[in-house]
Every structure is written in structure tokens, then in C-alpha cells.
Length: 406
Image (cartoon, rainbow, N blue to C red; front, side):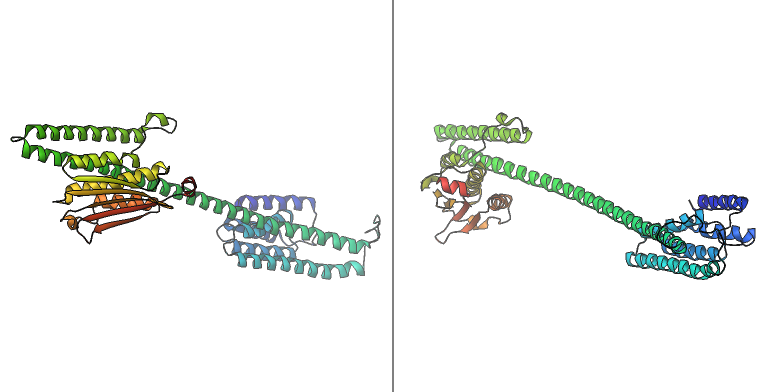
């Protein structure tokens, strides 16, 4: 652009010389005229990279060219406008850019005032006889000419300053929008990543709860079958039947879980209802089949609870019973209690095993229980009892609607 403007300034200079319109007075030599046209126009090449220096150089060259009565003012005036606008639109230091533009505009008006003070004296001393022959209006012609020129310069420099500010604000808004869009994309990517991790944890927890419980039951039943196979075939058949039932149930639950993972939002009817607190009886019965004296007690008036809390309570009981079968050693008594309290639902699983204290507190099962309970804002107590054995107790707070129903 700087080269194109320089060529345009030289072309304008040639045309002005051809018309002989030297409004600023007798011009200097053609070489000097050409020099001033190039000096004002060429610095526009660096207007984006060095906006402050470009504006200062063009302003000084512009005033110097007029002081030397260089006739080319049409293109160089536009160059000065562009320099002030560019500094406003691209100046990296906003305070400095504002000060430089105000200083340049003030200097330009100072130069205009100086030029009028020098040239008006000669006009007033020897005015042309027909200079204002056609002038009409209440304002004296000479004052009207000065005020008109000042108004034109005010509009010129005002628009240069204003449009520079507008361009900078628009660029800043665009940058902020782009930054917000980038931040939004990063946030969405993080949300998707967290969702994937959460889904993987949920799948791992479900797989552990389903597989570990039923495999533990099958292991206990298979061991019982092996011990009584020769001396009591009837008990062996009963144990094998329990193993078969546990395997079938495990497959059914795995199929149901896979159906949940594969189901689409518009196909809710393709998935069976998830395991809930009403199925705790089945868990206790399977534990009883392994030889434990398992009991189930329900206290308080049962109230409708959400599927998520019901499933979390069921999985907590299931994992606690699984741990009893796997880690409780010589446990013979298993007690499961469900309490419907005023503001919460509580499940309590205890046994009389003597080796429960060796359980790994950071095991997958206990971690899964903590995550399930914490997801519903509940509390979990896991540890040995003072009277011996192990206790798992979880409390799930009831939402307001369910409390009202209770």
C-alpha cells in the first residue's frame, strides 16, 4: 500500500504542476517537490509494524512539505489521515497511541494557526479587489473562510481519531470472542473427557459388583459341593443348582447392563429396570444358600425412592455381602438391615467373621461403595465392630419430594 500511495502522490504532483495550481505559494524545485511527495507517502509501508514511528514521520514530513509550499496536498492529506487511523487501530500501547494522536492533532492545529497568522497579514495589508465580491451572509468573508477551513480540519482529524478507536474496539471484541470460543471448546473437550472417564468408572463399578458377587457365591457353593460330593450327593446337587442359578443371574445382569450401555435415548423400553433395594432379598437368600445364617430386617415405613438411590443401596448391600463371603473367613452370621428414617434411608450389613480386619480399605469394591454413596451425598461407615466381625453402613439422604411423600 505504501508504494501504491507513493506512486499516486507522484502522479497527483505531476497533474498539479500541469495545471499550475500552486495554492501554497511559489513552489520549490521539482526535485524537492518529488522528495516531499515520497517522504510523506512511502512510510505507509511500515504502518502496521511501527505505527507510532510511521505516524510521527508522516506528520513531520507533511508539515515540512507545506512549510516549503510543496503543491501536492490531496494524496498526502489522505496519507496523514491513514497514519492517524492506523495508530488508533493498531497501536499496541493504548495510552501511548492516544497521547501520540492527540499530540499530532494538536500540532497540526498549531501549524494551521501559525500559517493563518503569517498569511492573513499579507491578505489584510493588500487584499485583492475582487477577492470577496460575491460573499453574502452575516459573517465577514475572511472570518468565514478561516472558520470553514477550521471546521473541515476538525472533521478530518476527528474522523481519523474516531475510526481508529472503533477499529481497535472491533478487533478487541473479535479477539475476546475468539478467546471465549477457544475456552468454550477446551471446556467442552474437558467435559467430554470427564464424561468418558466417569462412564468408564461406572462401567467398571457395575462389572465389579455384578461379577464379583456372583463369582464369590459360585466359588463358595462349588467348594461346598466338592466337600460333600462323596458323602452327601443330595447336598452336592443343591450346591450345584445354586452355582447354576448364580451363573444364570450373573449373565442376566451382564446382559441388562450391556443393554443399558447400548440403549439410545429414544429407546427406553429396550432396557429392563435396574437392580433396586427391593431385590436385596435375593442377595440375602443367595448368602443363605452358602451356609450363612443370613437375616434381613426392614424397619420403618418403606417410601418410594428414586431409582438411582435404590440401585446404590442395593449395590452397597451386594458388595458388603460379597466381601463377607470372600474375606470374613469363619463368618456364620450375616445380618442385613434396611431402615427408612425421616430424612434418609440406611442400609446396615454386619457379620461375625474373625478375619474381616484384613480387608484392603483401598480395594475396588470399597472404593466403588464410597463413590456410589458420595454421588448421592450420603455417608459410609466401614470397619470392624467392637463385638467382633465387620460392619458396612451407608446412609442416603432423601430428596425433598421423597421426604414429603414419606
